[in-house]
Length: 215
Length: 257
Image (cartoon, rainbow over the protein chains, first blue to last red):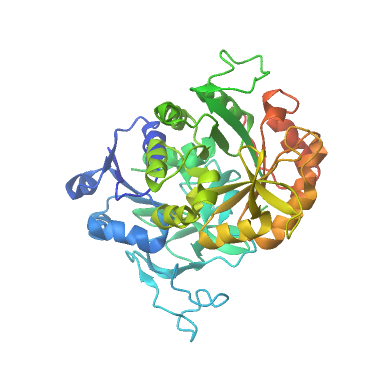
C-alpha cells in the first residue's frame, strides 16, 4: 500500500491516480499510523516552502518522515515535497531583490525557513531570466539512478522557482534552467524529484513504476 | 537541451461539451472533452486548457466532473478557466484535479483576488488571462472584457505589471485583434508584454501558418496556445513540434505509444 501524505497541498488527485496505475492500493492520509506503516510514503507539495512546512508541522509530518527513514521504509518527495526534505529554504526570506539566497549576507532580511532536514543544504532561488521554471525539461541522469532507469532521455514537467544546487544523497541527477540544479536525488530509503512525475505523461508514470517496483 | 517550448491546445467547453468542432476522424465523440483531452495528450500536447465559456453556476458541477474524469486518465498539466471568482472556486478545481486556474474578468474587477489565490496556493497555480487589443492607451494596448467587445479602461502593460506584482505565475496574452484571423500572432504585443514581465508568457490568438508559432517564440513567448488550428485539423500538434524542432527550437520528445 502506498500512502500519499495529505497536509492540504493542492492537487493530490493526479498523484493518487498516477500511483494507482501501478496496481497498488493508494490512500491519501494525514494519519501518522497509516503514513508510517505504508510500503511507500509520497510527500507531495505545491506552493511556498514555508506554507508547506506549516502544513507538514501541523500533522507532525517531519517526525513521520524521519521515523520512516530510520525504520528503512521508503519515502518519495515531489516538487516542494523534495525541497522540504532539505535543512533550509530561502523562499520568502530574501529581502532585497538581487541578494536572493546569499545566506548571512547583510541584505538578508530574515533567516531561511527550516525544513525536515534529511538532506543537508539550502533550497534557493534559481538564477534564471524567466521564473517560475515552468514546463518540460530534460534530466542529466546519473547512470546509477534507479528512478530514471529506461527513461534517461525523457522530459519531465517542472513548476518551481527554487531548487537545491548542491549535491545531496548518494545518487544525483541534474537539470538546467538558468543554472544547474538537483532534479532527482536518491539515497537509501529517500528519493525525491523536483519535477512532477504525476504530471509528466508516460515518462512520469514509468518513473513512478520504477519507484513502486523498488519498494 | 533545456526547457522546451510548450504547445497548449485550448478546449472551449459549455454544458459539458466542447463547442468548437473537431475535425478528427478517429474520435468516437468529437464533442467529449475527456476524449479530446486524451487525444491531444497522445498527440504530444504539453499542457491542456479547458475554458468554461458558459461559466454559469449551474455548469460548475459539470465542469468539475469533466476535470475529475480528465485528471483520471490524462497525466499532463491541466489549466481551467472561466467563471472563477473566489479562492473557494480555485480550491474546488484543484481538488477535482486541475493544476492551474486561469482568471480574467474577476481579477480586473477585484485585483486582490490575485494575491488571495497566490497566497493560498502559490503563484504557480495562477494564470492571468489578458484579452488585449491595440488602442490609444499609454502603451498602445488596452485590456478588454466580454471577449474583446468592451474596453476595461486598463492599459495592458500596466495591468500585466500589476498582476505580476500581486502574484501571477504566468500570463496568457490573447490578442483580440488577431483572434480568429489565422493571420499570425500579434508580434508587437508579445514583444511589448515580454519587456514588462519575467513570468512565463503564453501567446494566444492568430495562429495560422507553422511559421507563426516560431515568430511568437522569437518575440519572447514561452508557450503557444491555440484552439481552432488544432480542432479543425489545420495543423496537428506533431506538425508544429516537427517544424519547431527542425528550426532548432527546443521541443519535448513525443513518446510514441
